[in-house]
Amino acid sequence: MGAILARPRVFEHRSYGHIYDLFVDPARRNRGVGESLVQEAVAWFRSRRVEKVDLYTHARNEMGLCFWKKMGFETSVHILDRRI
Image 1 (cartoon, rainbow, N blue to C red):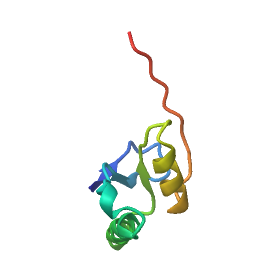
Image 2: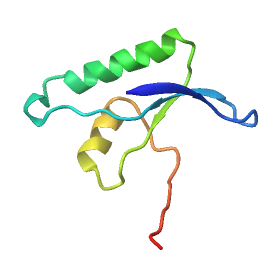
Image 3: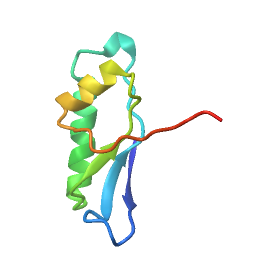
């Protein structure tokens, strides 16, 4: 679900947590399962002295964006891509 990664020295938060994937079976959604998983992941990062956690979600994933904002995450960067 997540890992502790390191950025080059020029970054303020060199060591950071990254959540790779979170999926809750549609039949189990809206029951607090996702919130519990994120809370446990954040506690795990915190216990390892990680001060910042990031993740990626698709810009068109409205349900995901709402969930992550509810969990206290904010948009801090926009990643642009282009098919070639």
